[in-house]
Each structure stands twice: as structure tokens, then as C-alpha cells.
Image 1 (cartoon, one colour):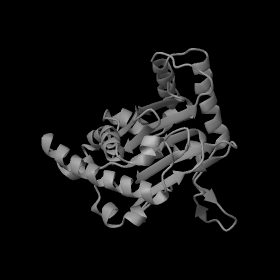
Image 2 (cartoon, one colour):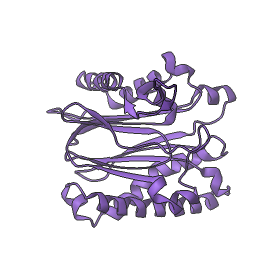
Image 3 (tube, rainbow, N blue to C red):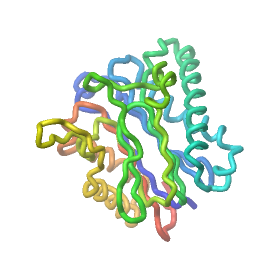
Image 4 (cartoon, rainbow, N blue to C red):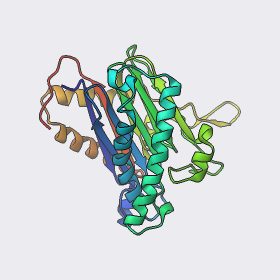
Length: 282
């Protein structure tokens, strides 16, 4: 029985709805073992014609590669938390293999490799804590047992507005200390969230003007809003709403209200640790 309920949705932004082009966001949630689950979000580069294929491939391929890499690691087998060094080494190794697989995938679908450009955010979570890795932008946070939400990544931002790095970027792997961030949360968490950058200004304090008129990015989740969404999912689950229906309602939420006017594609994953509940049939 899983101790976690994790729900995700990816929907097209207004820009892609108007042009009738595919959603370039993708997400995937998978159980890797009895003790570890993973949630992955990928955002395809807006200027790349096949980035929707790149993101869809990436979110499913990365968990497979990672599970094979971790199969012999004691911390993964035992369900204990790794050191920061152990996790970073495995994450970087897995991303390197993923990049090569993406290159081979481009050949199989007869497209330019760079046209598959996409970002990646992944959180591997258990009852003991969480580890994360990302390339590019977006946001991710975990909720500690004391109720505090803490960010587990800092989005990469280039010199130009909207500029970031991608899994396909040579620069990302030539400068991993700058472009590939890994974190380990060594204590139990109650919940987590991952969002693509299309949702960041609705759920994060991203752009704040100080007294001197300068912009800064606190990278702090708006706890009241995220807690409200987690509570809504928890309530539906407790009311015996099926997981598929909860996912459908999350998709509708991302399409409604103020979020309906967002130009960019939108992805959200929310997970929370269940207490004394029984899994419902999906």
C-alpha cells in the first residue's frame, strides 16, 4: 500500500489553444519500489518544433533510467536517505544517459535532436524524505512536518527574459555546477509540489520590487494557496473520489478562472502523505 497520493495535470496555455499547437508540457508519476516514488515534470522549449515529443519522452524515460541506476544502491534498497554526494553522482549519471537516449530517440523519429529541447524537474520521495534534480526553469517545493514549505530548486535564468537551459544543451553538462541542481531533504515531508514556469507567478513569490525599485526573486511558494490545493485533493480522496476523477478536476482547475488567461502551458503535480487511509481503485 502506498502512503502517498500524488496527482498531476498538464494543460495547454492560451497561446497554444489559439494556434492549435500541442501542449509542450508533460508530467509523469511512477512507483519505483515499495519505498520510493518519483514525480517528473518537463517543459518543452517554445521555439522548438518537436519539444512536445521531447518532454513526453523525457518524463517517462528518466524514471526508467534512474530505477536501473539505483537498483544496486543500498540507500535506495533500504529506503534511507542518501548523502548529497551520493544523490548528485547518481542524478548526474542518469541525466547523462537520458541525454544520450534522447539523441537516439531523435534518430528513430527522424527529427533534429535540438528540436526536442526540454527542461526537467524530478522529485524522488519516500516516508523518510526527498531528493530532487532539475535542469532549466519551473519551481518545486516540499512541505516539512512543521508545516513549512521550502523550495528545493532555483530556476536557471539566462541574461534574456525567459532564457534558460535544457536537457539537450551542451552547456548544461559542460557547466553542471551552474546548470544541474540537486538537493536532498534529509527529514520526512508531508507534501510536495512541482510546477512548470507557466504557473509560477500564481503559486510563487517570483518578482518582488524593493524600496529602490529593483526586482528580486524570493523563490518562495505562496503557502496559503498551495495548502488550499493540497487540502482540496485530500478532501476529494477522503470522500472516495477516484484518482482519475481528481486528476480530471485538477486539469479543469488549471483551465479555469485567472489561470485560463495564462499564455504558457501549465503543469502541476501535488503529492501528500496519507495517514491511516486505504488506497482507492484508480
